[in-house]
Image (cartoon, rainbow, N blue to C red; front, side, top):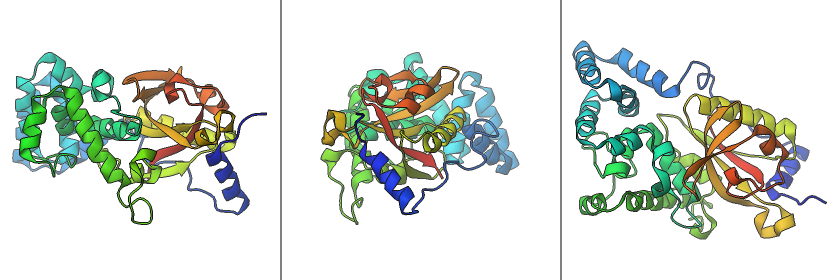
Length: 319
């Protein structure tokens, strides 16, 4: 007899009492008009005054190899001055640092791994934010603190602490930001009181704190025993990640491994989609792992892309 999954049971109860969940579709522009970062950058460029547009052209045209990164910074901050500041940092960074800032999910390696058994969700949220904000990515990779458009994860930090972290290996900076994000996701998450850190990151806290280029996020309970429910959610995830927006997904086990496993136990970050299925950043190993759509729909078998867990149980999606 197959094991039970508590989020699946909750989903079935909600259906029985008529408490349906929100539709799985994200906003109509995400994944229908190309890359979300490009869409946001184009909107900002269209609003720039003529002098600011000329300054943008000068900075970007002088660094064609960094143009995609500079557009992302413009989308994140709306500021040409912040873009120019990033361009100066780019000129000083070594090639290996540039590679990480361009692609923090693919190139951060083991430095970005979760620091303990409770920070898988925090690790995913840190890389989600860094993928959309080169200011944060530059600090994680090189310890470079931007003067303009300071990432909110660093906004309350003591400058002396940031300076000390800048001299340490990158893993120390990723770990520090994970702790900041975990505090934010867990604060006020149980009727205004803190969610216990030992239980990881609550999905509603993750949705509240998730940050990517102006998007707002929501959380959605999943039931991978109900294909009619899960399949359209996977369609949404595929469309959104194809537009360049990573999405946190929660995984768990079932009662065949004990009741304590039949709840959300791990968080991974969906980062891409192609003919072979989904590409997922797995925070316990700090690497991107592939998983097929059929494997996610089938459930029940331990999957490396889900950190060895067997069921998709919750998703964080754009509103």
